[in-house]
Image (cartoon, rainbow, N blue to C red; front, side, top):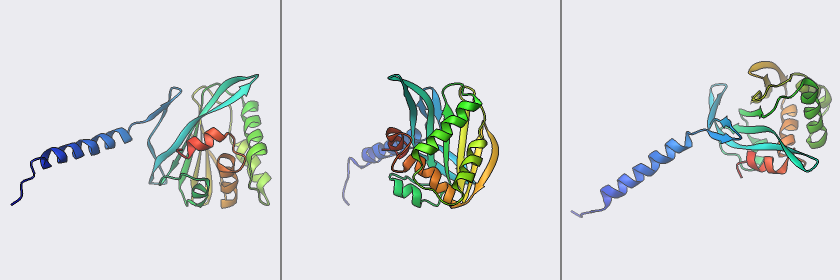
Length: 195
């Protein structure tokens, strides 16, 4: 019978590594004081944090921190094509780092759609306007949440479900905001993809 003197220590080290990885992977991420959970549940399905990042806006060469965005998916999605092909469910969280009034919320979403959407369809304007109209003013730390469940887009404002937009077409438009050819911010696109 062969004797393996280092086998117990190797097993111990391997077990310690697995335990450490399991513990560390369950920790929440912190960005600008915002706690970003490592996983969430949508429609009874566990989702993992795919990526998260900070949205900034430069005003007279001064970067202003606007919100922390987090993107959750059932499996790692590292490219725009993988995100578009995913059947979901998925979730986006936008946690704001400042107080934002109603007119600024509407203006910001309208501007993002105008500048970054690269996928449109008949009825797009109606769905876009309905989506933007579901968001109200935000306090510091207020959150806007968007979930894809099947072909429905669920819109939450400060923890309250405000409405649903039906159809995969709107989901494609929304995804093109973040992962299309003219994303809201290139560095945020990369961060949400976990790159």
